Image (tube, rainbow, N blue to C red; front, top):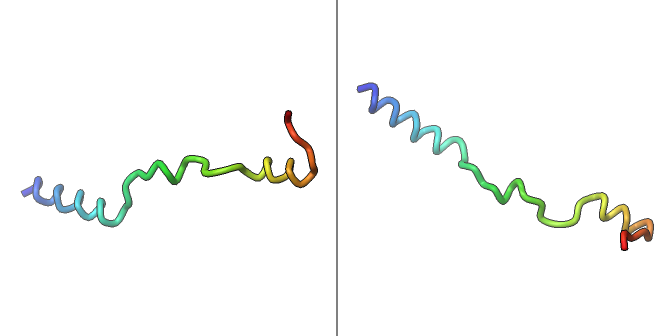
Length: 45
């Protein structure tokens, strides 16, 4: 009986809490520092 409750709770958690999505945590482009450099006309070359 405990195993069935545990399985039910695990399934409910999976529905309510999304899994790990690594694409949320990776940078997708230049950040604000790059934008500031472009605005001031400064480059790093």
